[in-house]
Length: 304
Image 1 (cartoon, rainbow, N blue to C red):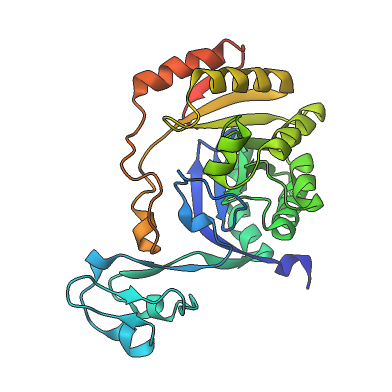
Image 2: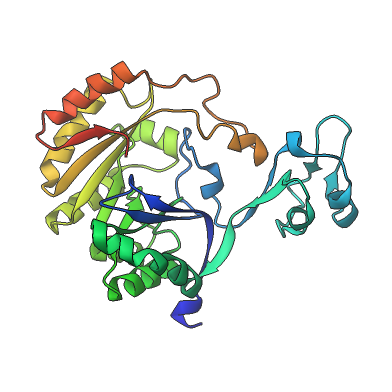
């Protein structure tokens, strides 16, 4: 397979973004992630494959979907119901649904197709000092696709940022970070046992990846999700501040207070939200936490 034909599932693409790195950017979100964070606001980014999403309140019970798919039912009171153990996520039902009660999270892109879309805004990147951000999910999980796309963009003089959880699944995953122009690096906690419970993986390799990138002098923006009762205690925050200070090439710290924006996506995928009932973090608490990190001397802001 030629490099330009490598494929990955894309679940969102935002043009004119100001929150995923420097300047005006286009952010492309790839499906697939090695973590399963309990607070994940993009559950549609965890699987590598396109997935059927159901919005029952938009259903008019026309019956078109049930006519073409034996795995779909249309009870009178709950909208479309699918047997997800049998559903192949082929998208046939979504393509004929007249009201978008059935849609797909994710669409396959080749590197060539993604490049053609992303290069359209090169003039804006150049004028603003911006570029392209590859995120997810986990940008390095589809490593061949991401590496080829990054090198194509860089060859055209386009600045490329990689948004990563730092959990590397292959040598090529790490090579992507080593050759990126900017890295948006998530730190989700310092206690290893809690990290495993909350994300499904340990954090030893993640911290080592961060330190390795610091030794290379890579430009890094740290992103800190702040989840009440899980990683917002003083001991964790102080340890994170010390770690970030030791890296040496962190240009900014972005604090990401817990929110509920992604909660509605879970039932659309037939999933139960793990933190049901959790409340968003008050702005006042986020400001208190910001002061801890501002003491490092590194520019710190709330949000991207």
